[in-house]
Amino acid sequence: MSKAHKWQRPSEAEIKQQLTAEQFRVTQQDGTERPFSNAFWDNHEAGIYVDVVTGEPLFSSAAKFDSGTGWPSFSAPIEADNICELSDESLSMRRVEVRSKQGNSHLGHLFDDGPTSTGLRYCINSASLRFIPQHELEQAGYGDLLSKLEKKA
Image (cartoon, rainbow, N blue to C red; front, side, top):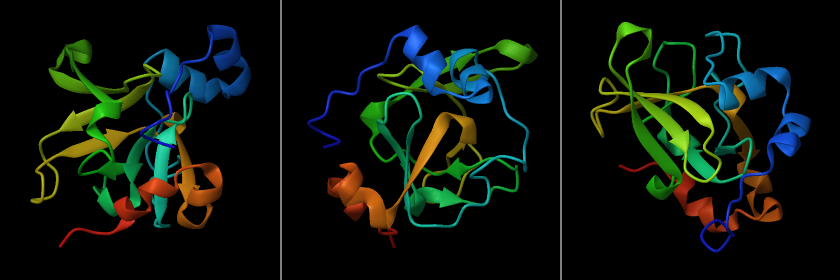
């Protein structure tokens, strides 16, 4: 489903209805959640993380690592075409903002202090993600992404 499916952004009214206040603040108003007190910062279960707004696949547990920051961190996206990287000069610093391509959801930021495999750290807000455990991927329509859960040597 992930490649053939056209991920579509719902209307503003639908987004407001389907998201919690925190999810809306983070994804639609470019917010940041608190570290160490969010849903996925220390989730170690195998599965994938999708955009909470559209369902487009974003990250795999195989690329997740403990960055010590209190937010979910990934070394690479599951499908690079589903991510947009934009210049962000807010807060008097230069950063790279990460957004979902179809949903245009604010996800977090990209830093160059990740593991040696890529050197990248996608620091992502849990509020922008929905986690789909490995055993539910087929039923949820993401069975074609099962191979993305295998750690690369």
